[in-house]
Amino acid sequence: MLNTENTEQIVAGERKFDLQKLLAPMVLILMAAFFMVVTPSARSVTALVNVLNASYFIGFMALGVTFVIITGGIDLSLGTTMMCGMLMGGLSLRWGWSIWAALVFGIVVCKLIGFLNGVLVAYLRLPPFIATLGTQMMGMGFGAIATKVMTMRFTDQSFKQVFYKFPNSFSGNLAFLRGFPIGIVWLFAAFIIAWVVLNRTRFGRYVFAMGSNYEAARLSGINTRFWQMLVYTLCGFFCGIAGIFFAAVYTTIIPSTGNGLELLAIAGVVIGGTSMAGGTGSLTGTLIGVFTMSTLRQGLMLMNLQGHWQTFMTGLIVVGAVLLDQYRVKRASAVKKI
Picture: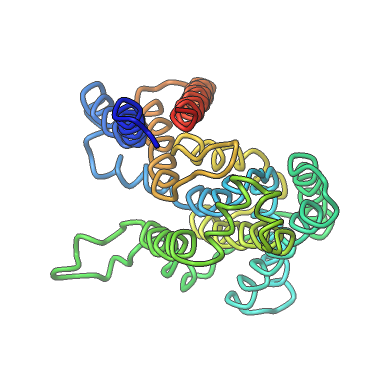
């Protein structure tokens, strides 16, 4: 039985942990306020739209990889998986398919790559870093081979109206939505569904259980290999969704475009407070982390700083987030030992 002093220490530890959860939204608010003060153009609607445009296709990948990281894994193939799916979708347009059939085909390709990652990690027991690094290079090479290193274009206007911006034909009470990025609405809808799956279903409980103690989860009767494979397949599905919105915004898909985008998604997850050690994580934090990173990149751009400064500052924040995560883990361990 715990004495009063120990109980107070545990409560204090829990309060500190809760305060640390608020760090990500506090950083986002302070960062946005800083850029608004330093750069007047950051106060415009255009600046907000640019932040949102830079957020949502990265946000979809980040939602998917959050599940993977909570299990204690990693997926380095996010960017090339997304591009490979859309390259195959663009190629199917040249075969005479409709735009909608092409998009579904692209998502299927992404899910198959995610499934391959799951098989390599869960059944063949390859380290996630090595397995997904391999599929990253395979996806980039396959997309280039299949398309003969040709650029794929998505120019269908009906497609862009659904996934890019609200049409300018809106009038009356809806006039304020003209030109507003519709992708952010889809992102929040996906976030709600993913949040329910992670926090209110058996699948979500298994995700946390595998990340907390994989062997204990297996011994308790959970088919850990199957559920781990499903996590990577789900991540591939989110990459396919992200590819659709990337194609809607940028129209042109080049085989090498996706290389490096996975780092932005993983950075958003880490900044949002999901532990790289597995077992803990939050989709809400992931969304905040993605917006924080997009705000930083757009703010530095408005300050006329070059791209390498944006990369440097993003890396600095990621390092800080990882150090905070290590501190959190040590504090939690210290509380449990009391």
